[in-house]
Length: 474
Image (tube, rainbow, N blue to C red):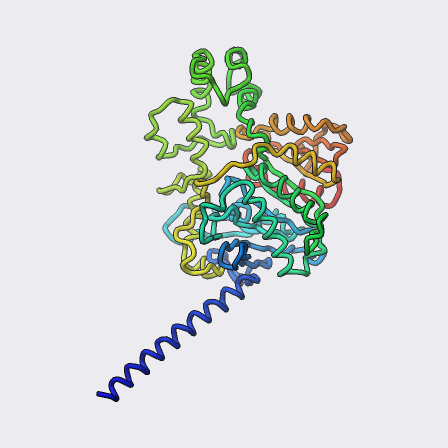
């Protein structure tokens, strides 16, 4: 009996020892990941990667496990030691930076072919911005993509995003000191046009206060940027300019709504009637890219409310996770592919995702978010006064953030024009139009692109970026 008792004790002891060893190895593994881990292969990509990719986590907060920010880092394919370093933030708010990695400026993209249930295939993108720059694609705000936290809900706001991104880049540079001297640029698109300028200002202020490591901040790049939150008031003018509504309806809208189409008095029946007619005209238009074929969203079919509400919900459909396989010709088909890909066990293993930290991966998590920054125009003015460069570009077929809106807030800065409105070219063809201001701001349109320009016109956007980043005229 005594021997049996001792045997049980030893068995219990060894179980505890094995459990402690497993926990120790998990902690050590997480410590290694925190410094970044090389990705040797990407499931769905045929052969070795023709670029260097690392993924990892940066811990924020009072303790390392309070918040863990996930990132993808692609080294420049040209000269990593001397090429610029970009921090990329996708819009939403709450859309994973994987959108930048596989849809916009990164080195891979999905092969568009009928979905047969197998892992979606990836192919190389020749027009990747990583040809000439080091790019960090970061999953922020907290709860986005593969980033996680003990208390996600309390960490989701515009200002929290700004503070977290600032902490992230300083900590990342501390862990990767070989990039401290590289010229640094913030890059963002869509909704991130709101938090990105305050983030650049916070980095600049941190440098002035002597925060370490010093960031070699040079400027910022924004594509199709939400800026004033009043962009909806320019939708009518844009729709009229693109012949989507008649002259008569346009004039009636201006007269009855008096330029405010976002906060309509419910007693203003004339304005409401005009808006209902306007929404009917645009009901079958893809507002993100008006040249695209219109694709039905099945979840919208249940919406039997007012037409104005239906149109607003149609805009939000872009951020939903498709529950069924969309038509191959629809943009949502790509969103379906990335969801299938990112949730595959082999992909998570290849990307060094920590087991048990994230359940189902979703491309965009927009809920539970506090919109705490109302307008980013004052931050543009402050940054211009400090001498930072900026490139602001718009797809000219984007009806959600029309180029009219972007031009209007740039005009409000009241800077003199250095290089007036002119076409810029790619292969002797007009690729868009551009204007340069005395505050080192360059504005450009990308002809035939929508929301977003880098996704829909990758070659033109790449050429625009490479010329601007090397201080050459577009």
